[in-house]
Amino acid sequence: MKKVAIIISSTPHGSAKGREALDTALALSTFNHVSVFFIDDGVFHLLANQHPELILMRDYIATFNMLELYDIEDVYVSKASLDKRNLNQTPLNIVNQVIDENQLTQQLANQDVVLRF
Image (cartoon, rainbow, N blue to C red; front, side):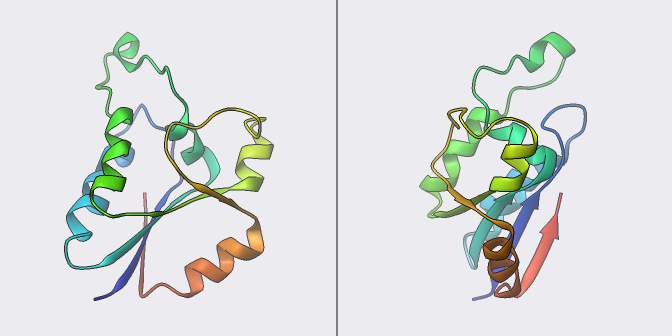
């Protein structure tokens, strides 16, 4: 069993990267220990009440709740990314651990594979 990190660093809408990251995490969780990291603009995936249909995009954000059902419990959010976007007091839509840059570096160093979306 490998330790796989999925880094989500892109915005949730306008490309398929977020959906691909979610699909990859769910698929890999069957035979691997998967950790998901939300950094940079990836933190926007964690905001509730998005309306992507207004820009003709599919709403997949609620599907992030599947992480827990697939036993993906290591979900990390960059504190610096939240602070930079003034989201540090905003409720996030899934269970997560907010970590600082040192913790982020340590967690990523412990992974066998790192995939960035």
